[in-house]
Amino acid sequence: MHREGHYGTTLLVGAGCVLGLGIVTGVMMMYARIPDQDQYIPESIISHRGPTHSIVFTLTLAFISASTITYPFHFGQQLAVEHNLITTVLIVPSTVWAFFAGVVAISLFTHIITDTLTKGGGFRVKPLWPVSSWGPALGLCTADDERWNAALLASGVTAFVATILHELYYSVLPSFAGF
Image (cartoon, rainbow, N blue to C red):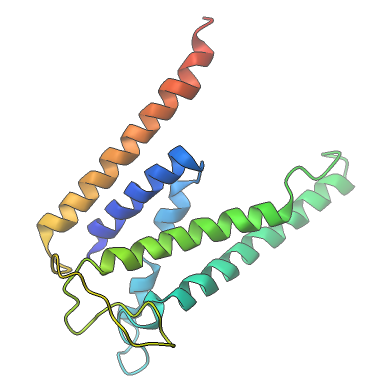
């Protein structure tokens, strides 16, 4: 898939996450295209849709990203407690870690699933790398199919806007009812 298709499915999944889990979709959008950065590395070093489109890569990047965010967050809270800016640690670091790791993993899994919609050609997703070279391809479209990419983007934007409107209607607007 192209950028639009990946952004669309990320917004679509993100809309469900915002509605159901309260996940910040902006973080998911930042990670939506990371697996395709393998296109900028010579094919002799890493193949497109190979290791960067695998469960191992997804879990590794989720672990590293969550750990990178959690430590400064925890350190900042500890500093605030020491300098009497807050009286106690407000959010447990393991909660931040689990939340951020989940956000990253969902975003990367969404990318992999979106790529399996394509015919694959010479570049099939290898989700079980390095254990297996199995490469699923549903063959519904080609990666550069403008209609599919536009449809995925439109459905993602529609779902995301509907979710935001839903949250505004049921969460924010009732607080203004007293005015």
